Length: 160
Image (cartoon, rainbow, N blue to C red; front, side, top):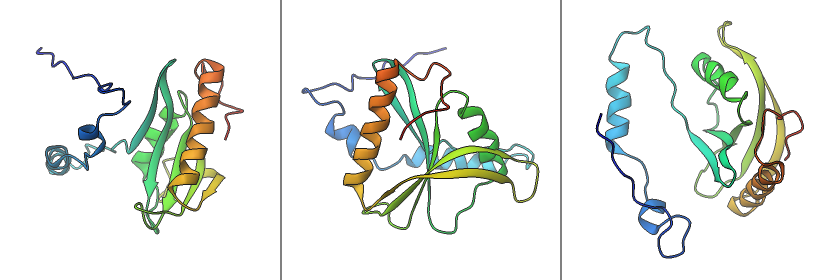
């Protein structure tokens, strides 16, 4: 197995360098996902939208899945969300315009992938007019994670 060393994300005193910050997606990753869909139609998959991570303590702060209007949750997403929520909170971020917002943030509380369509429960956590309020919400979540020293299996009273 060949290991590839990734360059440090902490260059010039910034948490994320400008080259990394300006990434808008990977054409190769998108092609890989599209080609995977051409395989056996029983090979189900879902992509991880966005995972918030912490350096100290190291771990996953939350899993986020952005949904545009009218997008539902698929059975494969319910399976994945159910697995994720054992490690960190899962949030669905609903919005019409990812550039400016507004965003409604829902905490995913569990679901059943077997019915068609699948069933699941959410709880409205925050309504954000735009990115400034979203940043405030994320800061509170990250602060709670750090205060607890990670989730450590205690996700019941996760705030916000």
